[in-house]
Length: 489
Image 1 (cartoon, rainbow, N blue to C red):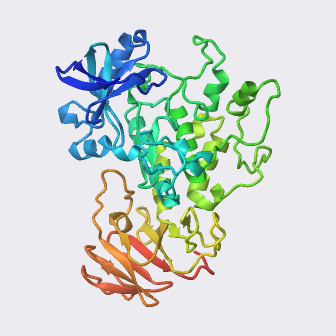
Image 2: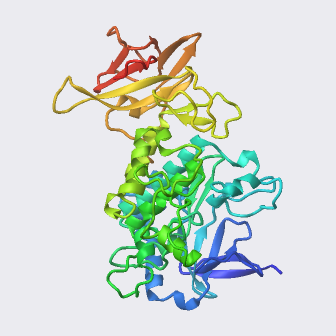
Image 3: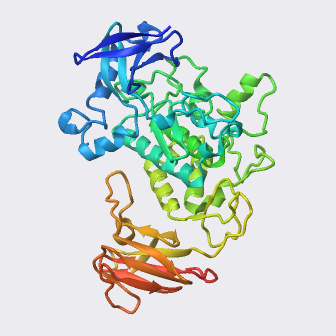
């Protein structure tokens, strides 16, 4: 039976919440919703867990470590109004402490899109359940309506946002400590994601981890040392380095719908538990490891090499070089930048029945790696070169972008050393259009942009572009047009 009670917060607010007989319950806390579901009140399963360290940790998280509040209003250093607004959409950050009827926290409830609605599944009643990623990255996908599943582009979008959120935590000296399918909710239909359970953040030297993590996302070095006494100096605890393992696992799952370490190899016949401990711990082996194929499943739909050299390289560093050497794992910033650069190479699959709908363009690839459909020639590639600072007049290729009709271009396409992040200006500066069989670059707002024959392409003007053409800007950027890939640079 439901009833409304009132929580009194440290800031003096009286917040109503709906008391239910079986509230959602996690490993440490249980949750009640506000009558309008705009916020949640969470109390600890065991009040003894809310000791002095926990209380001081939460006070710091709500205050000086909070990226959802501007620095001028007591939030994290370097956060302005715009950035605070951005990160308020990326985290369910706690914003107050409950002092009565018992100790707890108040957090923003996640948006409606992170709950399943009544039409989410034709066979299951999922109404009101959280969109935990294992619904989308495992065999559970078969229970969901097609409109819920997203595609490769939305998977990359979720990955960019998650990488950016983790990067922000790490830049502030924090670690989540339990990144997993339970604590990162995704909405593949929109490509959105949100990080929850923020109150257990690790602050090195101040607030140690309270949880080891979630199976499948705990770093191998943590799994391998979990049988040691908590006081043993050899025991490894969650940190920013272990976050990076979990981050790579989540990204891999979003893209391929499988776990990167769970394959056919059996590491112990003593018990399933011992095999699991070894397979995710000291004997963990990437299922796509090219040097040891003993854990490789028979049939893989799409592989890391199908994602282009940037993402393929990051996955190899995460699951080969860095799997048992945390210092070699890619940082969240590297993932964010690599994903953004790879986003530039997305091309749409012509096969309307392809469930991934998109693929990563590569000159060597002639067929979609997910459905086998032949790639059409409706896209062209823009290769971006930046002038080196040490040798004026010398240019170095930085990235490529696959474009088609109505593809937009932004400041990072015309200005060196800009990689889009939460602070980047997203104003449209130019775009590509196709008229008949010809492509044109239409300049909306770029100043100092010149055509291959040297004439100025003023804002409001267009320029025909063809294979081998080179456009250049007075900011030190050359743009080479490529439609023929027989002779690569």
